[in-house]
Length: 144
Image (cartoon, rainbow, N blue to C red; front, side):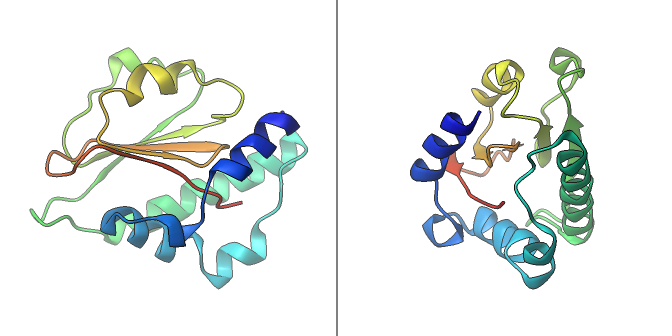
């Protein structure tokens, strides 16, 4: 896992490498602020990862609960784990899928990310957006 993480680290960027307004706003206001920097750590143990995963999901819930798209429709968040059957989920517009534990099992991510318009790979998590009015883009971001 360490070699994969080092490879990811050298090929990823921070918020300054993002050129999409939607993704830049998400990264700037949700992850790169004082509160997130205080709690972040590299999850070497399962307990540390579970704690960070809960905090990650809470930050996304808080961010998207107040975020309204240009069509005045709220975003729908769907959290996907390795136990979730992605074939049963629907990918409607303004839907955000959040994959936990992306570094350990990428099979579902590869299966679904082909149809997403925005793909954000954060190594430990993956975020897919299915916005119809958005060009297809992929980002590799260091948020931890």
